[in-house]
Length: 92
Image (cartoon, rainbow, N blue to C red):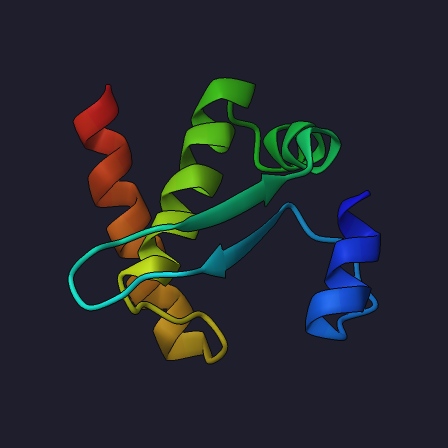
């Protein structure tokens, strides 16, 4: 369960839609991404988007973390959301 991973490895006692573990070295991007399909479905309904688009957004979000993007501050989150939007458009 994703909540257990969030508590055990990140010490975050919250529900989440994605957890990414970054194993990147230099310019080689690699890692593990764990996704809560239930949370993605909930988010899709909350944001009034289709499930596939929200799933793509979450995957892009995880990969952006591997590329060095953060989302802890409001400003960082705005930058990350803009990047997500950019790459989502490439998929459509």
